[in-house]
Length: 131
Image 1: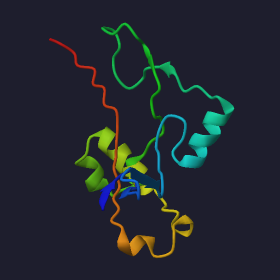
Image 2 (image 1 turned 60 degrees about the vertical axis):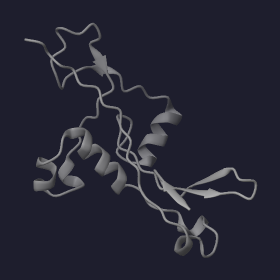
Image 3 (image 1 turned 180 degrees about the vertical axis):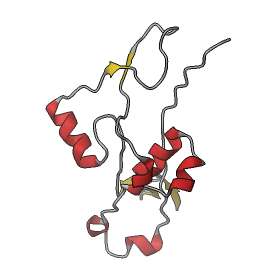
Image 4 (image 1 turned 180 degrees about the horizontal axis):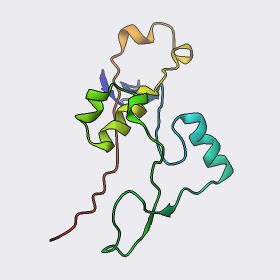
């Protein structure tokens, strides 16, 4: 058995195809700091596109983005750990901390037999200034 994430477990099916089971999800994004806020924002059709405030945009053609505002990493980790991480890593760790496995929905005996892990994915875009 192989493990992949976000809290996904990959199992070989009887027909040789891979089966993937999503056992939990977590998110920290511009729409919300947890799955419930995120889902509500999606259903309501909220847009988070605003003028960029976190870095200079004079040299950029696009002046808007969907930024995560009011994110305090110390709500998810201690101060020293937060200081050692880049912001994107802080957000990824916060999202992984939001994962709550739905063990009640798994077949009996599933957890002892399967390995599981959390995978964190993020899209990183860095505005680099020249000069």
